[in-house]
Image 1 (cartoon, one colour):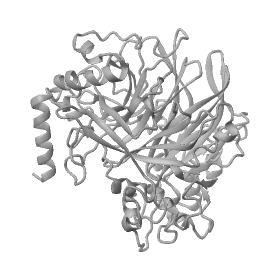
Image 2 (image 1 turned 135 degrees about the vertical axis):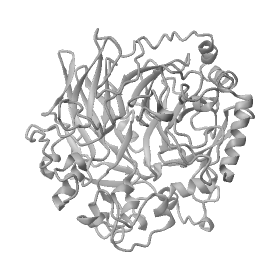
Image 3 (image 1 turned 90 degrees about the horizontal axis):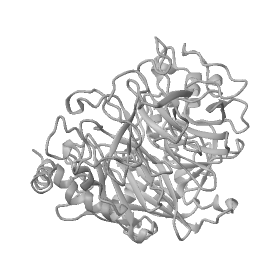
Image 4 (image 1 turned 180 degrees about the vertical axis):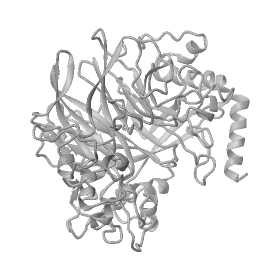
Length: 620
C-alpha cells in the first residue's frame, strides 16, 4: 500500500469513527445549511420530513431504456438534432455519413452541451448552444478510417457553437431556419484575442504573427451568459485535437495541458498544419480560453477573454457583486486541477451595455484553497491571487509577465498552493446571489496519486461517485478573499456500501442515488437541477443507478428527487429555460442506441424540450 492510500485510510478511519454517514450530515451539513440558508435540511430529512415546497413532482425510478423518461404530467419533444439544417438553404441531414463539409457548416453541430436562451419577446428567443466534439463512427461512413482533407473540414464544421432563433407556436418552441441571428461558429471562425495574453510571443504563429487573431473554437463544454446579453462559451479538452507524427519539443506546460506529439484520434494535424505541434508549437496556447459572443449579431467577432485564464474550462458562472464588480466562477475539469474566480477591474453599469462589454477584458484571477475544520467536512477557504509579482509568481519561479501567468494558469495555481480538486465542473450561483455550488464529478487518482491527498472537500480515495461543494463568501461579498464551505451532498450507492461515505450523504438513498454530478443550474425559484455524466454500467459499484439522469434538489430541505433519465449511452448535459420557465431545454449528448428516432436509426446528439402537460412552470 503506498503512502497516499495510507493517508486516505487514516482519514477514512477518522471519518467513519466520528462522522458516519448519518453523523456526517448531523454534524456538518445541518450546521452548514443552517448557516447558509437559515434552515436545517438534514434534521428534517432524518425526521422523515422530505416534503419540499419546491419539488412538486413525483420522483421517477432509474431506467435503462433508450428514451427520455419523465415524471407523470410531463412530456418531451425534440427541438433539433445533430445535422438538422439551421438555414433555409441548408441540406437535410443524411444519415449515410457522406455529406461534405459544406453541408455540415449549414447544419446543427454535434454533441450538444452547454446552452443559453436569450429572450427577444414572449414567443421568440435566441438559443446559443455548444457543440463540444464529434463521433467519427457516426460522422463518417468510413468511421474515420479513411480520412481526407474535406473530412477534417467537416469535423471542424461539426464543432463550435450553433446559434439559432426559436419561436413558440401553439405552445411549443421550434427552430426558425429564417432567423436573422442564425449562425454557425466553428473551428475556422476568426476570433480576436483580448486581455493580458493578447499579442504575446507565445500566441504568435506563422499564420498570425500578431498573436491576436485566432481561427476557431472547439471542445466547447459548458457556458455562461452575461447581463449585457452576451454568451460565454468555454474551451475544455482542446488538446485532443492536436498531435504530430514528427518529433516535437514539448515543454512541461504542454504536457500538463495534455499536448502530445503523436497521432490524435481526430487526425486534424494530418491535413491541417495548424494542429501539428511540431510545425506550430504555439497553436495550442491559443486555446483553453473563455470566448465571449454576441448572439444577436451574426457578423460580430467572438472574443477570447484571456484575463479569465487558460485551462480546461467547464463553464463560467457570472454574478454581479453588490458593489458592481463582475465575478465569474470557473472550474478546470481535470482530475487534480483547481477552482477559480475572476473579478473585473471595472464595475457593471446598469443599462450601459456598450461599456459593460469590456468588463471581462481586465481584472484579477484567483484560485481556491480549502481548509477543513476538525472532524467536520466543512471549513474555510481562501482565494489566492494570480497576479505577476505576487504570491511567488515571479521570474524566479518561471513567470515573466502577467500574460504568462494567464497562459499557464495551472502552473500558477500550483505555485500559490491551491487545493487540487475532484474534477471541478459546472458552477451555479443561487438566485439569492450569495451562495455558490460546484460539482466535483469524480477522481480515480484521489488518495493514490502524489499531490492529490484526501482532504475535507475531497473526502474519498479513488472517488468514482462525486460530490457537490458549496460556499458563501465572507459577508456575502463575492470580492472577498475568504469564504466558508461545506458539502451539499456526497453521491454514492447505499445499496452497495453501508455506513460510510461511499454510500453517500444521508439525503442520498436507493430511490435517488446517482454518480458523477456534472451540469448544474438553478431555476428562478431556487430549484437546483443536477445532471450526470457517469458510469451507466448498472453493475458493481454502480448497480441500480441506470442510465445518466437529471435530478432536482431543494437547498432549503436537502431533498433530492430524480426528474429525468436519458437514453442508452448518453450524457445529460446543457440546461436552460424559456423566460417564463415553462419550457426546459436539455441536451442529450453522444447517445449510443437509436435515440431520438428509434428503430434502426443512427443515434444523434439532441436538444429536447420538457414541458408540463398543464402548461405551468417546470417543477411547480
